[in-house]
Image 1 (cartoon, rainbow, N blue to C red):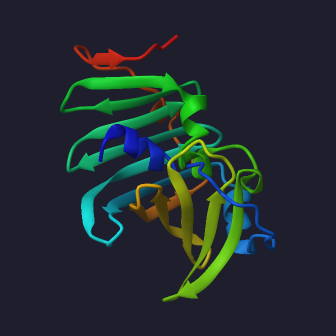
Image 2: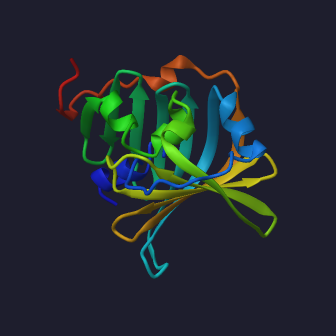
Length: 210
């Protein structure tokens, strides 16, 4: 997946086109999870599927989030990449290419799925939210963005009990990116250095850090 497409579905986790809907209040398990969420860390597996549910790409790594606006997604395979937001800047670093791209964090976080996990605004102001049918012991909530700033048009957020286990992000290209989470920890103390990035010596930096 290209970095631009990756930014549309992470780091994270989006604002696309929606039609106004009259919806009931979000279920308690959903609001309880997000209302008091300060930090989050987990291992993740990511799969990109096309419209025929054929696998296009698979990757894995670890993520850390500190609300509002700070996160790190470390991709370990099939290539090493870091996505880091420090509250001011958003960095995308490709270790193999020795190349880093930097952008204002506000521009990226408000237009990607990152707003779901790391944002500070009430989710009801950003999405229409609707419970979905429970399947195979899990329950889910569907979120449709209220803005047209992203290629992601729909999120399905899955829970087992009160534990977030998966996020599916559907984009306007007909693809779906699935993020599955394991070893999740909520509101544990995180080292602040996780959310800072200094390009290694010799890195080609694209963008302005001022």
